[in-house]
Image 1 (cartoon, rainbow, N blue to C red):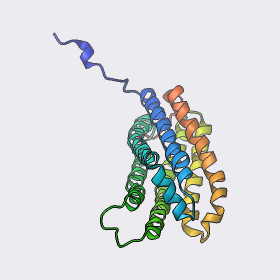
Image 2: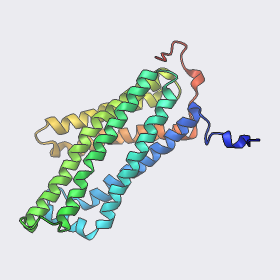
Image 3: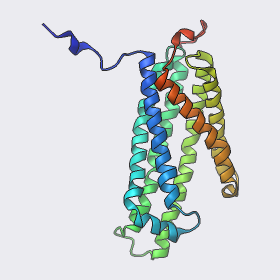
Image 4: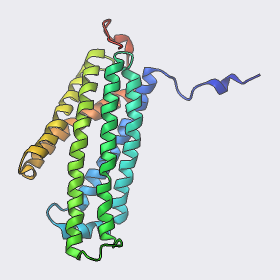
Amino acid sequence: MTNPTFRRPLFSDSPRSYARMAGLGYLVIIVSGIYAEFFVRSSLIVPGDATATASNIAASQVLFRTAIAGEFVMLLCDVGVALALYAVFRGFSRSLALLAAFFRLVHAAVVGANLLNTYMPLLLLGGASGLSAFGAEQRYALALMFLTAHGYGYAVGLVFFGACCAVLGYLVLRSRYVPRVLGVLLLVAAVGYVADSLARTLLLDYASAETVFAALVFAPAFIAELSFALWLLIKGVDTSTAPVAACTS
């Protein structure tokens, strides 16, 4: 006779269970992203100074590589969070939940491809074969250029992530699975992400306004995403509060 315990799922296949999975994954994403961008790269990259940046990276190669590894963790969790949030909201609107998941997965794909720009400085500064035609100053300048390109690659990814946040914000507002204020915060974050990416694209002197955008965009976005993640992890969702006219198409 088969032991029935072997047929039990590893976790409850319910919106609340998926919500907690999404919350945990979201927290890992936030920690990994902050570590990679603000703790590591911001401490090593000196804007406009290729020589100082090259010196910092050469002296802290292991630290620089941990930032890349941190982004691997972030991207893996992004895929899991996309699935978990789809499972949470599909009962309210399958099409919108799927749209949010698609936007998040495209964002992850763009950020993953963009990671190649962080490998290039390691090759340039590590004396990879075929670089003998470039002098030291040229290699330093190229390394900084690739790191700058990495920032623009992030801007491309954030357009899709902003779209994901917008759809999630709408789902939160309409479904009422979690407090509606979280939906408002996600919508504010979405506007900020897209606005920052468009500013980086359209402004001729974005660098002069970058500090302002960082304060006005990423601080509210951090509050929104952290609040959403903590609520999902600690409280989960209450699907009984969904409006009767919920669309499940």
